[in-house]
Amino acid sequence: MSTQPLRAGGEIEAILNRYQTMVYGLALAKTGSPSDADDVFQEVFLAYCQCRKEFRSEEHRKAWLLRTTVNLCRRVTASSWRRKTVPLDEGEEIPVPFQEPEESRVWQALSGLAEDYRLPLYLFYFQELSTPEIAKVLSIRPGAVRMRLSRGREQLRQVLKGAYFDE
Amino acid sequence: MNEHNRALFDAMQRQLTPSPAARAALARRLAQRTPPRRTRPLWACAAAACAVLAMAAVPLNGVLHPAPPLHSYVRDGGLSTADTAGSWDMGGADRPESAGAGPSVNTGDQDAPVLDLPAQEEALDAYQRLMAHFAAEYGADNYPDWYGGAYLDNEGGQGLVVLLVEDQDPGDKTLELQVLAWTDGGPISFGSAKYSLSHLRDLQRQAVDSMWELGLFAGCGILEDANCLELTLTGVTDEALARLAALDPEDDAILVRVGRTADLAADTVQPVVQPAQPGGVPDGTGRDPIAIEPENPAEDASGARAIYGLPE
Image (cartoon, rainbow over the protein chains, first blue to last red):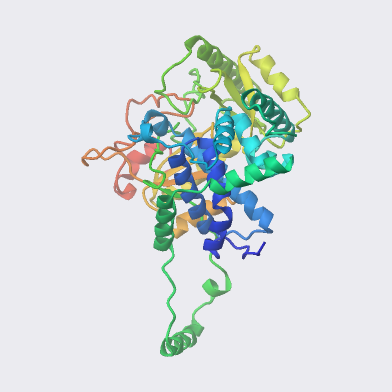
């Protein structure tokens, strides 16, 4: 993995290419809406360019992007304006077009979980974060992360027949 | 995780890409922020060197001290589906709670349909009891440092979610048990928060004062469910963003919006800003502080200062 300047804003194209799927994926897992995830994706990288932050390490940069994504998602989904507004194209919202039916089935099952379970599972299995790292990103206790992972896996086992989310 | 699942998740992750339109929009917005660098011919470099020499007598503060970090902000229209409405606080010192009126829980959405009224009433009762305990224990309008706020869980079981500041010992359930005892075992669940409500209220006062000084202040509220402030400005400057960055160095306690205020003359749909306090309590004056807010605070400072409880 090539190293990028640790100051925010530098080499934005490379940073975008490296982290766009992570940011977009987390935003999609949290909001459930591709258009909201697109909005959050833009805001996260604009915030990244504006913050002029010096990162201690690549892990620090990744953690900052994840945390900022969660915060911006929360601001989008917590907005009372949004809750009272029905987008004109709501009916046209297209689910994520995965290539394989198995992939679509797994994502659909994950998306069907409550957010409390969905996000820890996404971060654990897709981003391969550890329990303490997930706890930091979501601002919850490590014990709560373990509990949510466990309950989330249990619910997924009932929906999916394969052991996709093994421990 | 077995190899098949790892490969499956990797393949799925690679497909989770933003739309080309979003990428293009981001590229445009980034380009607007930072104009592309052009290579300069030699004569321009020489002229620049002369200019540097000519300015040698000028104090070099700006050169020796790098520019301060700037706070992030969202321009109205950036997150196009978001608005500036929330639970609005006009200064905090004269909130209805402190005057003895019964506080209401900050739902963050006053006009949301009530899905389960009895359950919501129980949660509201629990909130009232919690506030009464705080008032008795810490004095009116004061909160303990471990308390991060509370909100109604409209999407879940209609209970009250009480946020505990995350630096508490996770193994210590004393606080949870105490809260349940104070609220007579109401329908309560617990969440964690980074900032205490007291911290957010202090931050709110500082941010409002600071932005008022710059003539940019439009409104400020505490979003308890998001554990942050929502600060709306009429415009943005580097000085304002630097001040906010100093107040919020981690850039996650203040959501800065630069946007519109209510403009009855304009024939456009504007987000409605509710004249209410945190806790969903109307300000009681019957006035709409946003509607009468001056375009230029300096031109009508007395009225707006009275509304926001700012010093003369």
